[in-house]
Image (cartoon, rainbow, N blue to C red; front, side, top):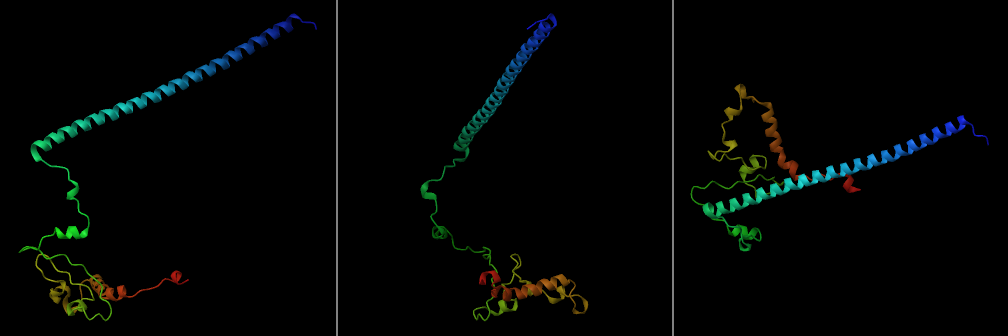
Length: 188
């Protein structure tokens, strides 16, 4: 093989380029490793800052709790409930109730549906479509006790047709609630 000067020169350049390429690849890998270390260090710094913030908050909370405890001991004297102060059930809660005193308001009553043919219902309930009458806690008057002239306009016609529709719907509510409709899917 005849090695000429041009051939040796080109082989030299190729070897220099290969060495430069290898150094560039090595340097790139080293730079990426340092970037990764910097990123990990930044993450650790953020975690440490979060821990510092948590500890500062914990310290302030505990110091506030101590201040609140001292204020409670000095001013209010509140104590934590003991095991004997808890109620076991509804009966024990009902036993704590007191009889109604003079001048106390009447208890709240809930509406219920009139079942068809129930003789236990009074005359007043049946007149209102099976629902208990709404009673004003201030005056004690029922809605049925309002004069008919207030709800009706001139000539006996109602001024508010929506109010009449609501009254008809309320009157039919008892019969709708007493009826049970079985869905088709339940029969299959």
